[in-house]
Length: 124
Image (cartoon, rainbow, N blue to C red; front, side, top):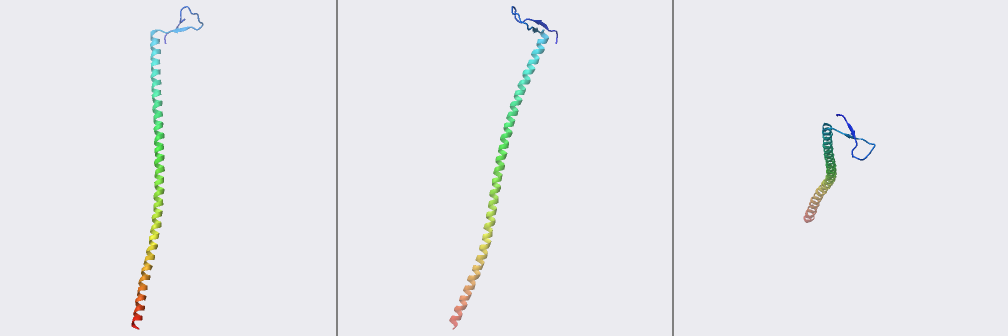
């Protein structure tokens, strides 16, 4: 910076604080620095808004992931319960198949015995 000259800001007003006066080169430097500072401040504000937006998107996506995970867990539980039910029903079907088999054997035996008895009774 160039030299600084002290002066009083207002004519007729006495103050103990001197005012610095700057030449045109120094004024341009100060103005340029202020513009750069304002630009940096604007860029920082924009970056902070983008970060806040990104953070809200991350929170929203995490919420969606948790929702999908919960939904997937529920679907897994439903599938597991249905598989248990299917296994139980298959076991019941197998048991009923055995019962039907023995019922058929019982009916065939009963009919054979009845035919035999009728034959013996009718021969006598």
